[in-house]
Length: 168
Image (cartoon, rainbow, N blue to C red; front, side):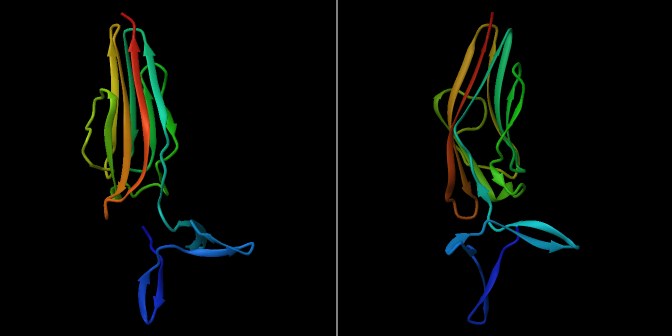
């Protein structure tokens, strides 16, 4: 990811934040534009990690399946075997750079398929799912935490509820 540097006392140092004066008040700059090959391209000064509570439920005849997938590219998806798949808001903006982050899923209630209780790299896709076959049901409440791999600081967390139920 590009980084901004400023010259302080004759030495170049990394700038942690950039501010601009807008309407008399100082405002943090999150996106700026730079000219690349004759075209203006967005430049995101800092990654923005953002997740929010969500429920993903699938109901089916013989079987049902509800999945939560965090993509290494920054995308976030809900997959449901019967009710269809859909995209959730990206967990990382700008896209890419998932390897700079780690994710941990902690079961708060129920049970889930997928790795829980350990920090996993978001340099590859990570997923969790619940499934039901022939009249059963499975549900889970997951606390998802995302932290920077560089220093271990948790930057966001949310609760995801997964549910699947089927008929006999």
